[in-house]
Image: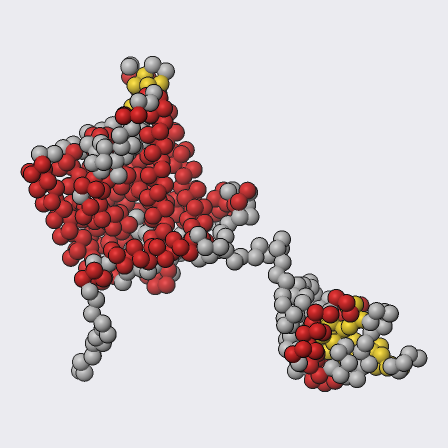
Length: 343
Length: 167
């Protein structure tokens, strides 16, 4: 493969992923409204289009047509920059997540990941750490106490939970002996899913992912009853939509990470034994990835409508005194497994 | 400074309750059960709520089968109305009942749907209907005259039966 072909194939993949991600985000908002409606014995949006399927587009047009208000005391440049940081990080993280095995198409071997980099997991961790800046700068630049409190909360929360998140990933890396997402997926062949091998790490990672994406029960940065809207109180129109989009995109990325690291990625256990043609297997495996992703996303929404929000001190207690030690215990657990069973 | 008394828990949590996860699963199963339960939503403009006969909607005048109103314009409803919404003007007629309302107006902006007019009426001539869709674009329109108030008796039979049974 020449350099031109590689660039072309990468561009096609980038385009595909961006479009799919936007669509998924749009329909995730719809799905969220539907799930919340079901949990409350309601029907949910069903007016725009068949069964309300055009609702996300109606929402986007509504937001586009709204007046963009910037408060007088705001720092205009940073105020504009903050949603961009959030959006950029949310969308670029998806570059390293593999959503399928290598496929043979038009005479090329194409791995179904935009960038198959050796330090993929570090890339994800680095970018999600940067996401703090989007929220904190938004809170600071708005010139409003609610925004500022939301921004401070988000920075404290995300930094604390990043630690347990990183340590729980440590267990996964011990087993896969690589930072490449594809290698991590391949290390979980059969039923050797990390969620089964290291359940403690799975739980700590799951909880940290909830805290990192600011989803309920950890949505303190935007706790409505206390902080009006938190860091995005002073945002309107498309800038608000930017935060909204990045929140949902972050959810998708967190789910994709959970699937990749703990639920075996695109693998279907023992599919080789069925002896299906390789093209069909590839399609089934992409389907399996999407199925797992949707299941984890549903879990995100389901949790939101089941659990109440944590108090701030409870959140910090849980992060530092429970999740952090548990993730350390998980590393010891995995090390013991490797020592005893020579995995 | 007085030391604040800390309220103790009534019951100490067991170990299983303190690791939260079983309790979280209980909560999740509860919300999931609710997700698959039947919904109670009325999709209003398409699917209308049909109230039971005990419902107090818009007050209406009963129109007999021959097209006359039942009302004898005694004015009791107007007298009892706490919101002063009803205005009646009586006139004489050649018919058996001798009196009829020349003018009967209910100001629907004032009406509070208490049903006192219906209760006080000696002739069962004013009853509360099942109509709850009241819209008007100005104050004049909100004053309902005899043209809007008169409803044939067979449409109101439900409410009249209810009144006879339970009043």
